[in-house]
Image (cartoon, rainbow, N blue to C red):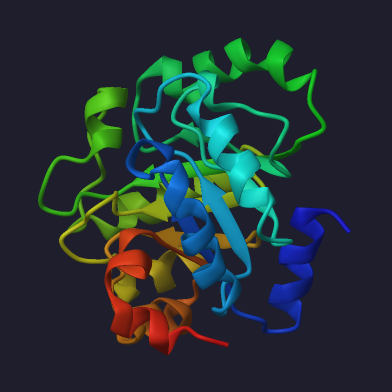
Length: 240
């Protein structure tokens, strides 16, 4: 079964999906075994790997290490073409539809095609929507784009719907790494209500309460990052 088919099947069966994001730029190789062991002991269903600023070759080494310790699907969440590696199982083919920088709407994608053709990666076209969280994120800085305002819910909804109409298989609402607070349930619900494709939500989720709120609002797959590693209490709540 493909990654995407499994996601859709899980939604039909009301299974909650959870991805733990590992940023190669912030992760030491000798810590991978411990991190992945914790992930295996949790309710996580996927592992995302990627970051906004990662040196070439680092992602491949990290993915190779991750694959040694888990059978969970490993999906690239790339900030650049240099992060593509055939060692992973799939890739979120991210189009930053909240911004207007042509490089991140289509330019990087064209650049990546010849590299992707040499891999067996499952490509998952994803409409990526960055929502402001009170401070500048690495995505905002690297992509030279502005996030959408939380106060303009209709604009967020319309952007998500536009992505779906363009043929995206997934929509990803992102508050950004280290966000001061997660995306409000009202925004998640409004977006979910107009979509017929899976919805991913990430950024700023640091507690079981916030995780539950995202699911209840309509998130099909929730992404957590540093909170999983640094908050032992949060990890204990996510154990199998």
